[in-house]
Structure formats: structure tokens, C-alpha cells
Length: 250
Ligand SMILES: C[S@@+](CC[C@H](N)C(=O)[O-])C[C@H]1O[C@@H](n2cnc3c(N)ncnc32)[C@H](O)[C@@H]1O
Image (tube, rainbow, N blue to C red):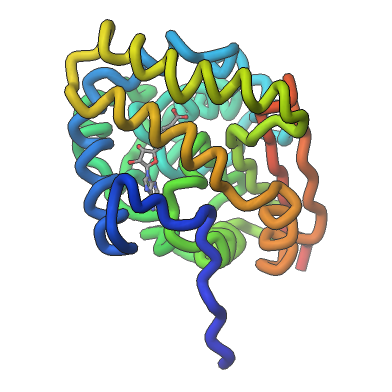
């Protein structure tokens, strides 16, 4: 079989790490150390990306009652909680998350199962879920191809993947305003309200990885290349991208 070259979601950000191994270690460390502040800082800079928005986005993507959901990059559980509400039970949701720190500070719905693992090598069986959700974790994976291939593998025919991500606004003025807010203001707020010394740096990285991210069209193309038949991107307020991909019936 032909080996596929990996497709990183963004170029290396060498201000933070030297190479791919360093990126992996750096991310693991900062998510562990900043987990204590994650929910507080997230709701502060939310722009509406809080529980209400996550629920609306999952609903728009077709998450309905009774679906078996795999939430990838669960973190403290902000997307998983909404998935559990829509599917009707925490018992319908399984989370996958590499950071022990994030899991230690998670507020997960009753009955939800969590597995330590990575999006690029999902520790679940083929065709075992109806819906894959990923909230704001796509910029942190090493390879879009591997991740979307995994989403396709674990979904049943007719299943859906929903990737929520922040994308750079199309207009130069809006991009400049968002940059000032996220790269400069949010790290100051994070220093004031956060307990972790790494939080301001993670917030700067947050923006830098958004700015360096591959264009949305490439995300769509990689989802199609993984085998998904219907792929759409819905944009809210010019920055919240909701990628929805459906696996065709066999
Ligand atoms: C910004 S948080 C998002 C958490 C949550 N999904 C939400 O909606 O708030 C990103 C999460 O992705 C996780 N992550 C980082 N690299 C990952 C990978 N390769 N596979 C899966 N999750 C990853 C991080 O540990 C972190 O918990």
C-alpha cells in the first residue's frame, strides 16, 4: 500500500518548540499544567463558544437522541457534556484525551467513559460509533490525514464527524482585531485570572496556531480524501468553523 505523507495542521511554531518531538512534549506539558485554568479562561474569552454554542453546533451537525458518540480531545469535557445532553445520556459518550491533567480537572457527564489516547490512533474498534465530535483540538494533532482516516474507520456507515475549530477571519481588518484580542489581551487576562504560569503562553500559542493553520478548504479536501462523501463547512461570526463530514452508507 502507498505510504501517505503526513499533513500537519500548521507549520512548526519554533518559538515554542524545536521539532515534532518537541511539539508533542510541549503540548502535553502545557495542557497538563494549564488544565486547572482551562474552564475559567475559556469562558472569559469565549465569544459565545461556551456550552450554548457547542450544543447548537453539534445539533446543526446532526447529533440526535440515542447516538453513540466519540468525543476526541475531550479535555475538561466542555464538548462532551453537550454531546451527552443531545444524545440523551453520558453513557452514550466515550471521550479520548491524551492529557492526564485535563482529565483530572474534567467535569464529565455521569456514565461517560474516557480513554487515554490520541486522535491519530484512536483506541476504539472499527465502525463502533455514530458520531465523532472534536472541539478545538484539530490544531494540536500531528497529521490531518491520520486523524480523518481514524474518524472514518471508527464511524458506522451513515455516521458523522463534526470538527469545531476557530479559523482566521477572511478580512484583514477583522483578522487584525482578533489578533490584538487573542494574542495580546487574552494572555494578560489569563495571567490575571489564571493560576498556571503557562496559561498566558498557551493563549499566545492559541492565536499563533490559528494564524498558521492550513486554509479551511484544505481541511475539507483532507476529509474528502479520507473517504467522507458529504463534507460541509458552516461558519458562525466569521471565526467559528463547523466541519461536518458524513460517511456514505455501504
Ligand atoms: C483546547 S482543548 C479542547 C477541549 C474540549 N474539546 C473543548 O471543547 O473545550 C484541546 C484538547 O486537545 C487535546 N489534544 C492535544 N493533542 C491531541 C491529540 N493528538 N489527540 C487528541 N487530543 C489532543 C489536549 O490535551 C486538549 O485537552
